[in-house]
Image (cartoon, rainbow, N blue to C red; front, side):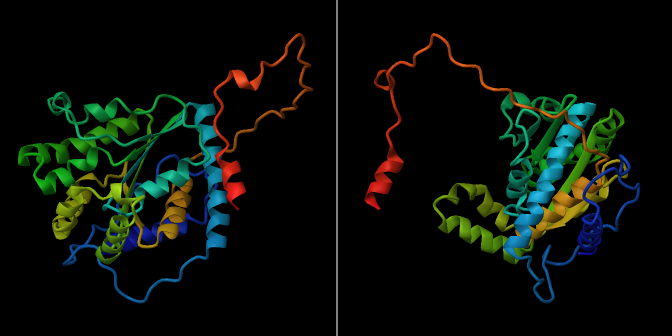
Length: 313
């Protein structure tokens, strides 16, 4: 779609500037509105060239080093960073979040993936349960799906009323403007995957006992509503792609490319700087005086399972 292509080109240009120090806000310019191509997010043309695993892992490690620098900058300056991950089921949001947080401090960078709301939460202001998870100074919050559930699955599957849906589209831009005006750095990413690639990933999950849990009964229902979700996304973008908090679209048919593109772009739209740390010299360990370790037999030891494996070999 036109919008996906425009956003992907912007992400590619941004990937060449991964070390930050850019302006705090992205340019106040909206990309072209997403097209409403029949059938949703289908791809055409020859298959793109894939990055080798060696080059992918080397670049991922470099970007992860910059993410650690972002973490230290957030801590040192008291910034509050929110990153929203939305997109199709099996689009690669979770695997990207996993790579982002791999070397980060979980006390600084938190993942928020909320379950179905309780009856009490259903009676609250819709955004209320998400506000509870917003970051304090020096924190990063990654929303693995977010308040945009209302514009997607709730809208398409009938989990909200038309009135609740219209109220969301009206309130969401105001809600996000308030977050930005209060100093929160808000970045929103939509992971776009073709229906063919999504189908392949669904089948892979169903056939893999280690990942079968990822495929829920609801996925079977949403799978049949592909075009409805495309229309819902298009309408959501029209109302919520605002200058203060624009949507960035990640082409996600190739997971490795999607991870690198998304992380590189995130780094390019954060005004972070590398924080200097004082040199740490470990002094000699003080000797243990008047202490004798009790016999190991007094404790419950974990059996040497690896020793058995080595013996079997």
